[in-house]
Length: 167
Image 1 (cartoon, rainbow, N blue to C red):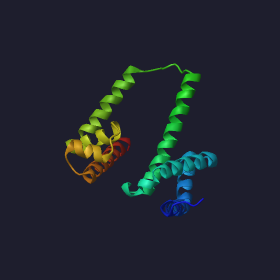
Image 2 (cartoon, rainbow, N blue to C red; image 1 turned 90 degrees about the vertical axis):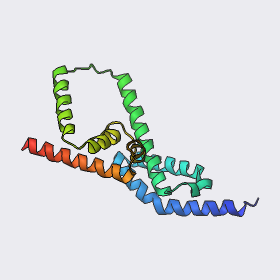
Image 3 (cartoon, rainbow, N blue to C red; image 1 turned 90 degrees about the horizontal axis):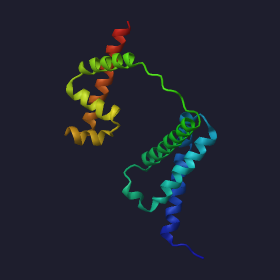
Image 4 (cartoon, rainbow, N blue to C red; image 1 turned 120 degrees about the vertical axis):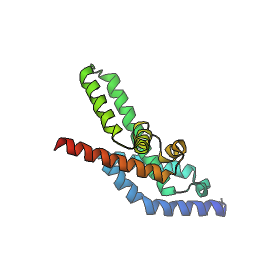
């Protein structure tokens, strides 16, 4: 049985891609997970998902970035599922100190108010609400690089302020 030439070429290109990226992805996942088995499982899952889209690889701007994003999302999903299973199995009583929470909210608000309004907006959208810089850029009507720059400046200013308070 003969396979179409384009199919064989796709396999060869995918094999070359796997050969080029496997070690980097595995090492990154090992660093994140601390487990060889988990790193290998996540790598295989990510490569499998990429293979499922390999016939449309030209539509993916950065196949390596896509591969790493899929792998890290897989790790986050596994971690979330494990945490939920632990919470179901071992319910922990919540002990909240409402005064400490109120003080913390006031401290965070005070720190945030020291930032420029644009830095504050970028930080809240990206770090608190979890928007990607592209999404936050559309909301703020600026470029994604501007959002990343504003958020970075805001984080730096918060660290400097917090460092000065601790000294």
